[in-house]
Amino acid sequence: MTTLNELDDDTLIWIFSALSIPDIQALRRVCRRLWYISIQHAVWLNACKAHILQENIPFPSRPLYSLCSRELERLTVRAYHLGRNWRAPNTRLRLLRTVPSNTGAIEEIKFLVTGGKNWIVTISRGIWSDLYLWDCDTMQPIGHWSPGRALFDGMVTNSDQSSAAVIAICVKHSSYSVVEILSLVSEVALSQVSFRPITTLQTRYKPVTLRGDIIALSDHDSETLIMNWKTGNQYLLRSPDTWQDKPLHVTFAGGHVFVVRARSVCIFAEPPFARPDDEMAVNLPHSCTSFGWVDGVSLSAGPLVRYTEKDPPFLSLLVRTKGDDPWSLKDQFQFFTVGSSLPTESSIGLPGETSLTDSLPLPRLALASSLTCPNRGPLRCSDMVLGRYGSAAWVLPADRSIAGLISEHVHLQTIPVPTSNQTLIIAAFPGPLSSEAQIKASIENEEGSSWSCLDYDEEHGLIALGSSTGDINMFSL
Image (tube, rainbow, N blue to C red; front, side, top):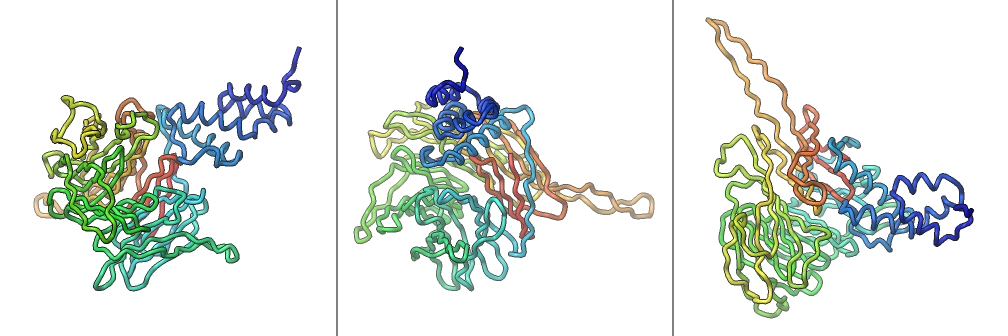
């Protein structure tokens, strides 16, 4: 009878490919040879494809063949436990660490992945604004950048991890504004990482999206400028005039440009770029909608949905709204899907106007599900992040304090008021991680602290929150 130790390496790798991830970890402990086989790249490549990607579990969007065997194993095992946590009846959410900081109130916080390394970027404001870079593993400040005597008004990170440009940030000087494109430079001799400006864009717009060499810039009313920051080629999109319509997202999908603002969502046929010396035409949307009283909108592209060549990729949209009643004590979180299917009874808002390009189908917006959460206090952290796999993170405000004096007969006495804190909410909407909309986990903020900004890294299961006191809270799923 043949034993495992007598089989050749290829046969053992094939046997490992039929095992679950816990079984791989168990079998490798039998002997040194099986341990040696289990650390081969092919073993974890098969495990990642079969137990992570095919199961639609969040995984970093990096080419698998670019990862070394050890890193692929680490990410695969981490994704496996993350998927089990999401699909468990009681999803666990834990505080990894709280980092006190004297950098000043944190106005914005973002995850940044570049060069295979995970970072956190924060904007802090004292008298002037400062940009800080933090190591995501140690939560130690690594780098700092400030032009001096200026304020920052908006920052975006590059979705292309291979690009030299990592951040675009709007810098407001006393009499003018510019957008700085920054790179990360490692100083090996000093063991430091620093920001270095690549180029400066003279513009009144603020950055909304950075994807490789393409940057989307918008004003607060109706205009969106799409530019190649290296060549200067550009085109202009104009949404219907809406006063103070703050830009939130710009996404490119299937020959369309989706421009999401605080009060409107517009879909444009993607036009060709014009050279810097050419006259630039104004492009109007072929469809537009508004959600009314909105406190936040988040747009995300799905990870593994397959379409025909002409169809746009699957997109999803999460809207935080009070419906028709701005004084409502409840928030509605409405989850929409965007596709090119024919109109249905659940399709809303987007009128069936003729597309600017007949070869492209008209995307449709359909309400898939919704959640309702109480809201009885001021919204100090309005950030809301929807992930590619249908999970989302946001902060519920603390209840308003109701205090005062009452009179019984003649004497006045104080009304006792229970304390209330902000609450971090983790939810899943219909998709790979959940069959229905549901709140999966929540955790309250500490008394005396106030979260001011949030970012969510779905692929690694991490949530970062900045506070008005300068502290950073890191949570893990």
